[in-house]
Image (cartoon, rainbow, N blue to C red; front, side, top):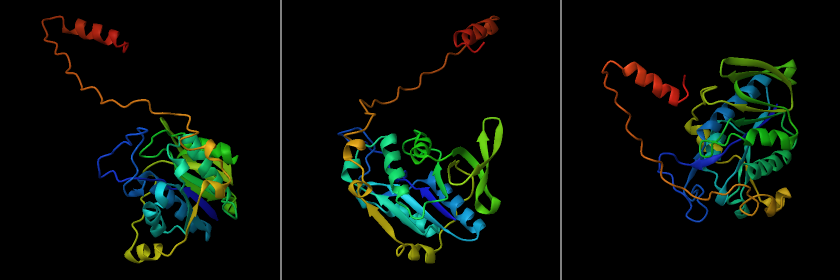
Length: 263
């Protein structure tokens, strides 16, 4: 079984976040680490390959400066290799541009993956739109918010328990497919020292937009369809109103709830 996992590398959240002064996007000039949200997808992929009795996990990422720190973490967990798309023209890419690049990278994997896994959303962007866009671009059926995945039919299909507000849906899907997994779906394994050392020798193939056959005008700053026009500090939280009961407190509370359209 072959599984591709989208693994985003983000600024270390232990450090205060900074914005690029030119385009007001997140400053990614410092060291990048594996997004914790994607570590769950890596773990799920490894377990599915083990359940299938063989195969491999390939990471797919897009990052500036040829950054590989986060990918090495996922490789130490057990992934076999990685594809990294790094190109100066990708600066300022929006969610759709990112999905186009990731889709092209996944198409370049041979043989084609049986399953593509993503997080539900990245920790630094929170758009939550890339999984659906990626599935559309790859022409794959998609299942979102998976809390559990099992192989069926000798590895030709999957059964997915999808988290909902009221419980979960149980779905079956023929492979190939794309699934986004929720945080906490599994406990990601902690790499051993030997695995960390071995990860340094695992292959990371770096690709440019030209090598993927993508025009810079289609993605990146020149093609971004969303622009940050301004950033302001959040308003200070206002103090609440104190109601002293003089016999009519219930009426005043009822009036307030009506103003808030709660009742």
